[in-house]
Image 1 (spheres, helix red, strand yellow):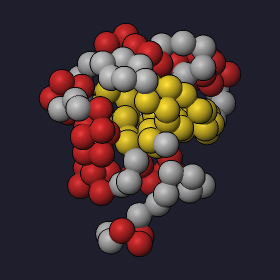
Image 2 (cartoon, helix red, strand yellow):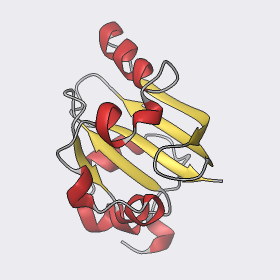
Image 3 (cartoon, helix red, strand yellow):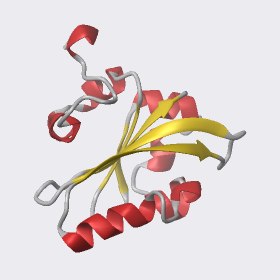
Image 4 (cartoon, one colour):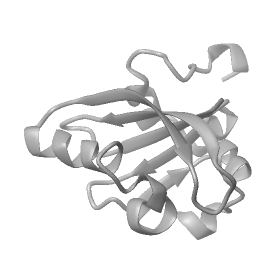
Length: 129
């Protein structure tokens, strides 16, 4: 897949694309991708996010997202929205302006939160501003 065929951060139904994409395709995206399961453990972490955050995938994959990897997102704006969507059996596709603060100087970003009933992966997408 060439860059012209890659979806952008705001593309509709991006969740379906992410579920089907292989790791090389995720690495080619121009924004960060953090994928995790219902257990909140990271299972996908793309190259863009690794470089931007300075965290090698081996330090992230297999770790709890909100309690270990991204503690600054463990709040009602981010983590709670995933829990609420699951409890309601609802689809979550929401963009949120946010400031990352863990292990780095404050970094303004736009996050896109994706989850849906019947899809095993949940995603936090990170677009640096």
